[in-house]
Length: 247
Length: 247
Image (cartoon, rainbow over the protein chains, first blue to last red):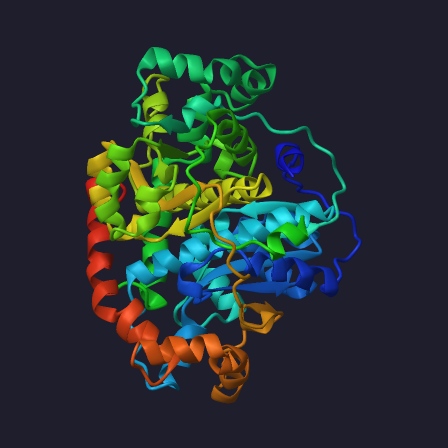
């Protein structure tokens, strides 16, 4: 199992082979056994295999080619709709139209998504996460007709791999694991943690291609800019409000 | 692998056997290979094995006994602190003090946590998620001295199982998986989806013990009340603000 986790790669190109519903259901079933808040299962997934719907979803994902090309697109949602409707027909007054409930459902939806991802990879499928699900959640809600108390939190594209990229580099473990006390890194420690990444041919080329001086600048000036982050922050907060999770 | 996922159970009682740092590092390493946003790795985990710190953390988790009893307590965080500090020493202007950045880091932290959980279970360890991490995140931040742009999103207690509970029931797959169109369930459909759960001896007893008429009322009136959810919503929003993720 650890070998599988250590050797995984994100797959962005898929063969045309469809993914059986029987297999998908087996993977979803395994994923539902993962932990969730109070066993309320306040998450859901919308399975899109229809080409027309994929094309409608595509702009919300900035037209990343995986959305149209993958046989299966999965929109994972924080979902208090079903639970709330159930409360309403059981003489119980639901109190889930708030931020903390969204947060709990968010955690559960991601646990469900990642357990699905691990299960899928163990069965020879390839997956790619699309963070754009929270950038343009409103557009996805419109396309998929998601009702109140349902908010997309991530998207996965799924299919049989048509590429075999190398395993991606990661920072040394010390960058993310703090034993005992949390350590705020000093400049010399950051230099050490990022040295291998910054000195690698791959990232040097990446910096040059983006016409930047440092790798960090590629992130701040090109990939994840302050302006965009602030714009999409307001959009997602508006979506939480629209769907009933924020007063 | 699917068998492992299908047969897992949450473990709340642990033997006194400590968990080797070597094993923990092996599990963390595997977990870092999971997907993350732009390979920024904007998450972290604080590993608590010290009994005194566990006791200090305990009230934030409503004194659930797992916190003091588990050999290892893991606080998983959305973390833009290291990344921002790195940008600052690389002539790059970070723009991550906003909600969308928190959301991306939140997703990454949960993917990391759940991959760790699956890895841990595959090596014979037992885990329990504590949602209280988002209820009392401020108190956890104080205890662990977490700096700005670091916010707890979930906690895991980890150890060797000293109990062997049955696999927990789940709703039929149709309750959470929507093929094609999202389906808002009608009362008769909700009756069908919840029938097995509501008719089980286990839940009938659970309702009776809580002096309620329906299972839904146990959730709305006892376990996840509107009043508490609203209270902890304000608290968590205040924490996001305090840590710099919300204007």
